[in-house]
Length: 124
Image: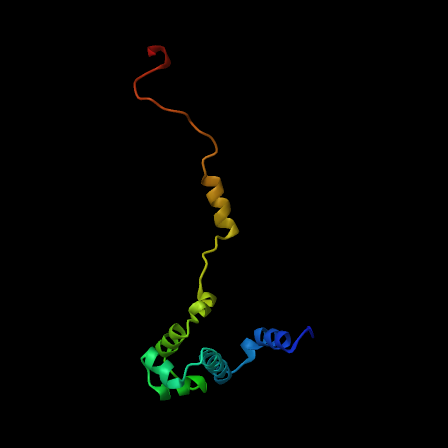
C-alpha cells in the first residue's frame, strides 16, 4: 500500500476489496457515487428524479443503497452524464493463440500470378 495521500489509499483499497464486499455494501457504494455526482452538479433529489423520470423516493432509495431496478440506475446515470461507467462492461473479443496460429497457417503465403483461360504466352 502506498501512503501518498488519503485519496490514493482509499482508491487502492477500493479496487482490491470489491470481491470481498457484500451486495449491500456494493449497493451503498453505488448510492454514494450517485449522491456525490448529484451534489457536485448542484441538483436536488426532486430535480434529478424528475429529469430521470422516477420518483424522489426511488432516487432516495438508490442513494441509500437500497434495491432499485437496473433501469432506474441507468436513467439516473444518464441524467448525471456518468454513463462512462459502462466502459467496465465492454467485452473485447480475444483470439486464442491456437486460433491465431491456425489463421496464420491458412493465410496465403505467395501469389500465383494471373491465370488466364485459353491464352498462352505465345499468343501475345
